[in-house]
Image (cartoon, rainbow, N blue to C red; front, side, top):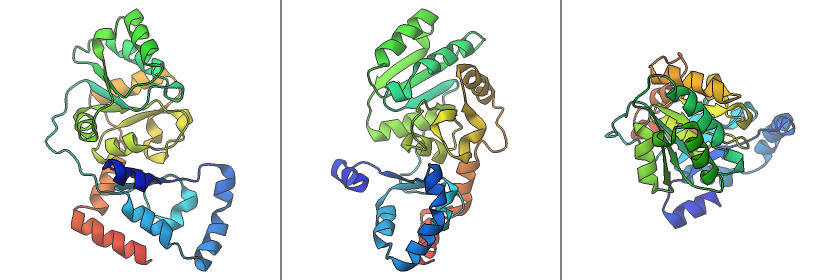
Length: 254
């Protein structure tokens, strides 16, 4: 269904392979037996049709190479210039992606000497008005831009220009904004409740205070060793489109 929608709207498709629940993890041995008896051609076709594929946790590790970002066909906007102090958040602004903790974190960072600080929201939703009102109350409305929904090419360009990517979703795993950020080599700061995979676990935060702490470190260039792990894994395993295509074909035969 996702692939059909992507083709219909001529938009990139990000496919994630999920098994987040405990009962799904227990089902992994059953998957092995089922795989030997069934033709998984339809699964492979879905994976090949997607522009970008990620896998979420270890229970499907027999079906995926070791890593989280499997491949990326969308491409990276190489001409995008990084804007100092720019933070970007992409997604619906709704009750599952409450932007108000992000606004509070921004206020903490803005209380220090950060003249270039700017938070850009790409997307819209029912909580956008409340976020704008909170920004006014905290005195940071001049440091926040609400861009609304944008074409995907523009989203990729703005993502590549950010120093840090924020996500607010507390109800799902890794999503398309995560993948776009990781493929561009950006650190991602996400809520702990979102079950974002181990790739960004060092930056899963429980509140706006932790979010502000990690963001200040990243804005100052104090990256931890694994902050670009996803980008390095992708670069080392799929250095060029030709290499990626060959390695992906080899894996599919296995």
